[in-house]
Amino acid sequence: MGRVLAENNIRLIFGGGKTGLMGAVADGVLAAGGEVYGVIVESMNTPALAHQGLTRLEVCPTIHERKARMYALAEGYVALPGGFGTFDELFETITWAQIGVHEKPIGLLNVRGYFDPMWAMILHAEKEGFIFPEHRKMICKSDSPEELLACMGNYQHSSDAVKRWMRQA
Image (cartoon, rainbow, N blue to C red; front, side):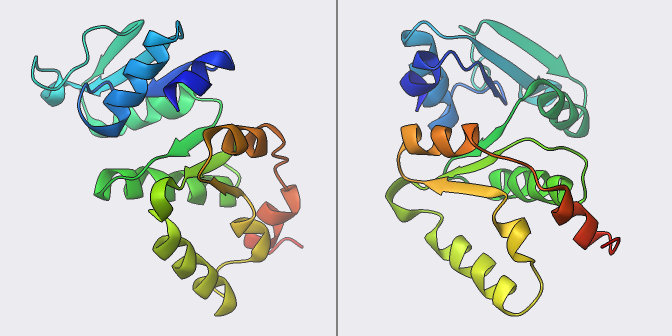
């Protein structure tokens, strides 16, 4: 993923850590000559956690300020396999698109089918009437970084999706 981002001249904005999948993606972007901006919360800005080789590293006092800064810098959002923090940021981003806070593309890099159970739950919620089809369609999903970025590059935000949620149409 990191190499593909760099090859497509896409700057990585991420949480600033050197561990886990996102640390590996950051390393891949940097190794391929790309730019990486980290936005880390003060409590995690430690030698054990913070990535020191980034193009830029910003430190925010709280997690809420960190998330707001990352959202402001990003032109799109990609979730890789992760835990509660990933789920929190992913669903907040989807919800914000649903209600019109942003019109940026959202993608799931479905490594080894990681997001398949969650996707099945999303489809179930749609079938039960809790998610509108146009809101589900706001999410690109692929196991290929190239295909995911192509889907996200073709994304067209539907103002009708926002209107339907807000009961204006």
